[in-house]
Each structure stands twice: as C-alpha cells, then as structure tokens.
Amino acid sequence: MIQFAVLFVLFIVLLVGGLIYWMYTRDKKHSAQKQNAALEMGFQLLKEIDPDLTNRIVQLHQKSKGQNLRVRNVFERPQSDCTLYLFDLLDYSGDSVTYLADGAIAVLSPSLHLPRFSIYPRIGDRGRVSGWANALLEKMAISRMNPIVLGTNPYFEKNYFLFGENEQEVQEVLTDYNLSYFSEYKFWHIEAEGDLFTFANLEPRRNIGANPQTDPRAGLQEALNLFELFRSNESPATP
Image (cartoon, rainbow, N blue to C red; front, side, top):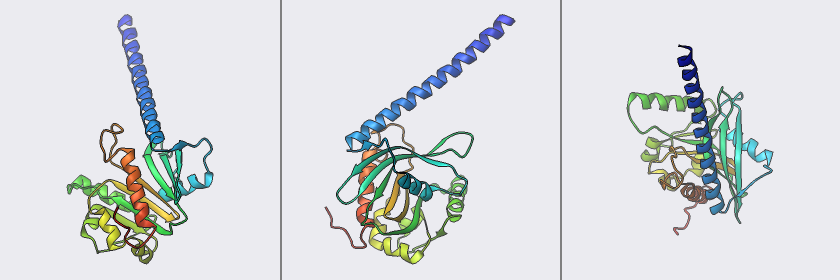
C-alpha cells in the first residue's frame, strides 16, 4: 500500500513537471517565432521603453482604474510619417496573468488627430451565448465611453461596436468611405486618441504564419491601411 502511494505521488510529480516543461518550451518557441517575425518586418526590440508611450497604451485599454495592465515585448519601427510599435498587453489584475493582446500594433504620428473612440468586434453567432458575450462586451466598454450608432453602414453596425467620447468628432473620422473598409467582418479591436491608435486582431492565433488573417505581417499591413484612413478625411488614392 505504501509503495503504491509513493508511485502515485511520483507519477503526479512527473506529470506536473512534464506539463510545466511543455508550457515553458511552447511559450519559448512562440516568443522566438514572434521575435523572428518582428525582425523580418523591420522592427527592433526596445531595451528601454518610453514610459509615456506605455502609459498611453495602458490608458487606452484600461477598463477600470484598478485594472493592472502592463505592456511587454515592445518592438519599434520608425517610418518617415509615423512610428510603429509591436507589443503585448498583459493583465495582472487577477490571480493569474492574462494576455489581452499578443502582437498588437500601435501607430504614433503627428499627422493623426483622432478623437477618443473604440471599435470592438461583435460575436458573429446569433445564439444565446454570443448574445450574452456581446452584452458583456458592450457593458464593459460603456463604463468608459458612450455607444455610437452612425447608421450609415449596416455592415459596420452588424459586425462592430463603436464607442466614443464625442459623437460628432468620431463621425468626422469614420466617414462613409472609411466605414466601407470595415464591411468585411474581422476580429479587429481598435483604440484611438490624439496622435496614437492601437490595432489588434483578436482571432485566436495558433501558429504564426499559418493563417494570413492572424499573421503579424498581415496585421502590420492592416495597421498601415488604417493609418492612411485615419490621418485624413479624404479618400486615399487607390494603390
């Protein structure tokens, strides 16, 4: 009996140890893949991060004053008209650390003059569970800003929530032309204010490069396209 108990305890220890090792190697492999992808896109890892930038990113994403958000793994890519940042956003508020954004992109530019607004993807399924999820998501965002219904693009209204502090100013940025860019449903989450906006694709990412919609390279192009839309109320030239 004692021998069986010892073997059982040993089995549990080996099982837990193996699980921890698997999680460690998986996370390490994912981090290496993400860093290689960032370097291939022209980003450089920042060893010293501007606290003003990280504070602004946290404030854009913070749902409540007590939420403990931190920005990690920041990469930078300066361009002639903007600076791009690749980052992870983690929530340390609970008992465990939660990834809120894995490989999100921030765009900082003096040519941006954006009002405060947020765009969240709706849960596409019309079932009861998705209805509860959408209601919870709407309640979380409403605690910070007001819901806005532009009423000019039914596809946008169907696929996304829009929140902002000043409806008129948001309408001046999200023109009919700009809203047409959101006609196709994607898992996009956008936070914007002033000369900064962040872009994240919330679709689950299994393997970097396996799905073009979740590939960070595709996310970079989408962020650049949004930059072209947001920095001017005029329709950008078609490439």
